[in-house]
Structures are given as structure tokens and as C-alpha cells.
Amino acid sequence: MKENVVIIGGGVAGLEAARQLLSLGYMPIVVERKKSLGGHVAQWNRLFPDMTPTKDLMERLIADTAQANIFTETGIRFINRLKDGYNVMLTNGVNIYSKAVLIATGFGLFDARKKEEYGYGVYDHVITNADLEQWFNGKEDNRIPESPQSIGFVHCVGSRDVKSCNSQCSKVCCMTAVKQAIELKEKFPQAEIYCFYMDLRLFGKKYEDFYISAQKDYGIHFIRGRVSEVSERLEGRLQVKSEDTLSGKPLKVGIDLLVLMSGMVARDENSEIASMLRIQTDSDGFLKSRDNIYSIIESERPGIFFAGACTGTKTVPETVAEARAAALEIHNYLSR
Image (cartoon, rainbow, N blue to C red; front, side, top):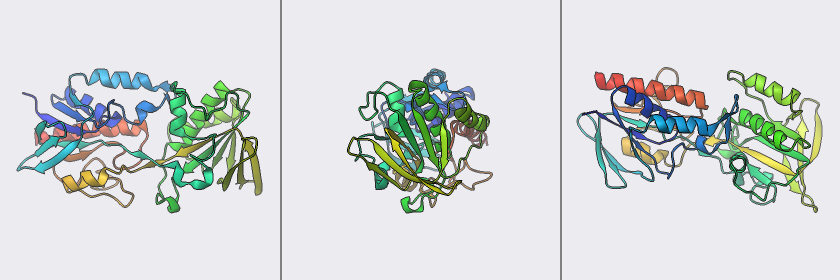
């Protein structure tokens, strides 16, 4: 009989870890609180920098984990530490014993309504990056004009912002803005598109090439300067006030659609999971690893492992790599 490994979270990290554990001869039991698998990534239309359709990744992960035991719309009621493992009670009444538990609960998105100066939820044509991805996926949104002449992106909404209680960089917002700007330019070639940024952090493979292409091939304007105010004119257009810090000049730009790049934040449920397992959360609310260099996927508790954005902001490639590493580490732990 195959040995159980409980995986809390059915996003990219949880599914990739389950895929690897199946190949190593274990029975992964994936517990996902939502109705569908894939987490936040599954809500995205395409992935940078190759513009890969997200559904291709999701279909592969779900197909490759078909032999796993997967519970959706299910949470964790409690977890008890036993002599050499954990007793996990699910909200559907199922009780599982496992010597190893992998936490892959992912992240939350910053609530853009907290940045009142940007007008999300107040002005008709202000949306978030998550809203825009839903529109790319076919969901109707009357906040998006039929033929916008100018579109703006505001970077770092809720990230690198001490006032928002989140001083960390979300890692993916810059590239998501570049990707979404290109996608909107493809749909609305007549539109002028502006990205208002603090600093562009393009650290991954082919990221810089993607950014250069956005400028050269699509004519997207990148303006270094934080947006200070968004207001609505009588005719319904938005006016964005900013400063071009490279030229030292203040700017006022008329915008038909404004997209706010909401950053990654720690999930509210992290404290509950931490309490159940007697592990710690870090100062930013994410789950705390044994250390931030060599043992990111390990907790202080024996048999409790991490993968993906539950410990901090991650890209999809980083998440996949951590999931594979966590599966191997669990195998080594159980073998010992």
C-alpha cells in the first residue's frame, strides 16, 4: 500500500508536488478549499514571457495527477501531531494519517480599494490586473470601454508600500503589466498605453527581451514615477497625475481605462494553519521557513514542508522548482 502524503493546496505548487510524489511511489492527498484546481494562476489567460496559454499548463498538471486523491471544496478542520506523523481531519469528515504534510496554500491579492487615491470601486473605468485577466478569459466587464484611446497601468499597488503594511516586492507585477499591456495593444492597436512604475524589476530569463519588445514592437510608454492622484472628468474619462522622475516634470494624462497592478500578499488563513501546526509566520504574514537561503521549503517542525508562495512571493518557474524540491525532500525524509 502506498504511503500517504497530505498536500494542503491544489494550485501549481500542490499539483506539481503531487505529480512528483506519484512518480516516487507515494499517494498524494491534495486538499483544495475551492471548487476548482489551479489557484490564482488558473485565473490568468497567458503566462509571460512566452505567452503560453495557462490552460495548457493546467490541463497537463491535472492530467498528470489523475491518480492522486484530490478533495476540492474541502478545508482542514484540525491537525494533531502523533508520535511519528500527523492526524489530519478534513471538513468533509475524512480522517487521514500522514507522516509528512506539504503546505502549498499560495498567496492572496492586495485589495485595491485600500488605495483610495486610485479610485478602484469608485470610478467606472478603474480595474485590477485580476479583473483584466478575467476579461481576457471571456468574462464581460462593462468597465472596459469598447474602443479605448488611452490605457494606463499603475505598478506596485499594495507592494513596496509601508503605508499598506507590505514593504515587499511582489516579483511578478512588472512583468504582468508588460504582458497585459501587450495583450491590450493587440486588441486595441489604436490605443496609447502607459505604464507608471517605481522601478522595473525584470530579473528572469527573457524578461528584459520581453520588456524591450513591448517598447519597440508595440510602442508602449514606460514612465518612471508614482501616480499621486486619479480623478474622473465630467465626460467620464480619468485624469492621472504623476511625475516623470527621469525628466523631473509633472504629468497629467487623460486615460480611458486604468489597470491597477495589485500585488501578492500573505493569505489570511496563514495564521490559522500556523496555529494548528505550531509553526511560525514571518513579519510579512507569510509562513516562516527554517531559513531564507538553504531551507526555504522546510519548517521548524518535523515532517512539515512548504512549496510555492505560502512562504513569499514567487513566479511560476520558482513555484514549480520548489514543488519538485519539496517532493524530493519529503521522499528523503520518509526514507530516513
